[in-house]
Image 1 (cartoon, rainbow, N blue to C red):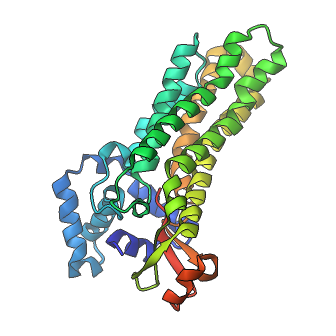
Image 2 (image 1 turned 45 degrees about the vertical axis):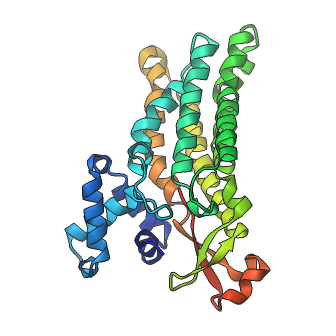
Image 3 (image 1 turned 90 degrees about the vertical axis):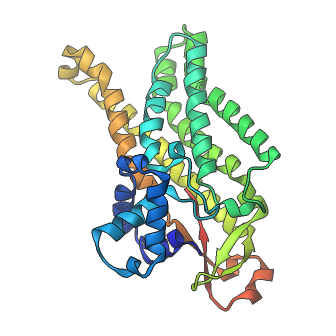
Length: 316
């Protein structure tokens, strides 16, 4: 078991402890760390000094957790590291939700958002689902199709408004404020389910309580993908729900009616705040080192260990 998984096994057992940890891991300054700094941190954690409680060791853990992939044994691309998720995806989310004057810019921004989401999901997957821990050609084609489909589906509300400008006011409100909520949550989950489908099809590595590899389980892979899909749906679903609800509640306020410019910015400001707050919350919903009971695994794995509960890397 990798050092990062050993750390997650000892820490982050509750939602609040994971949330505190993710708030530290998501420090954007970690993006500036060089490969040499990360390797130095990993070397420190391999030594006996890791048992010491000091700031140097704590920073080394955060740097390792935020930059090193536990399955591939290599560094995660800087743009797909957890701390880069908000700075890159937030502008894409805002641009995707804004009303555009045509179909092409709408599709363009949704395509960029779905492309980055798919790339992030793939870079932070459980890579033990493939023998060489590399992306297969079939999976690459599947990811490309997923991005294209999700971009068109995500732009659907604005496409409807653009082509059917004579629809009723109630239908316009539905397309602007209601339809994007289930659509955003569903597409976020859909991207995870398809991009990481190899984990449930091929299975992922599972470990006993001592960190020893027990085998490969499709049940654990399906559980890991499902949990991550739920967390991503929660992130995007909440990000679209709260601004829409706030916009609806403030619409009748006299103060907002007298200040139309302020009212117009409410949705964008609230989207930024909610999205930023929900990222560490959604990452903390499920443990990075997930647990699965032995009776829920394939029968052929039951005789390989006496542990009643086994562990797997959920990915992000």
